[in-house]
Image (cartoon, rainbow over the protein chains, first blue to last red):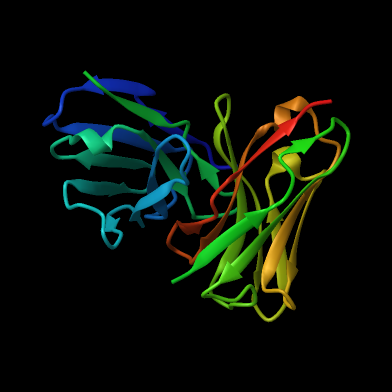
Length: 107
Length: 121
């Protein structure tokens, strides 16, 4: 299985801050990396596909980068509605695997 | 617009079989470009992919190693839906279960509403 390692596991930041979450794959996955936002009681929401493609309707303050084994999700200016848990996920090969998650909290 | 509607019991006894169904509207379970997945979420494990079924001239299944011996995912073309069966459940299988669509190379773009399944006697 391809292991996905996210860091940090949690962070606390004020509204307006720039935040970056990283994700590392245990082997190269080219750009087959997706990012999700998950809020309690809801289904996860796909934010970014193939490392850097913003899904329709997702605000432009979200961006993704990377290829191979190292990836990042950046929120350029945190808004109150962005406080949630974020997951990376590889779609390179089955079994599909997720990172452990990063909980973004209000400071 | 694709919609996924889950159904099934929220309480299962230990050693019994967990069964959930996901009804698809706006797409076809027999699509030759989509895959139909089950994912679960728990506080201890985060998001965990369980498996998928998909059609590419014939039917295929892939399963997570952690549940491979206990899981079956089946398509039902007559009802345009797919199902999850997880045998011999334990309290560690307590989680919110989601069905979801993937369209390679994109991620899980449409999700069901989620079903909290509690394993308890």
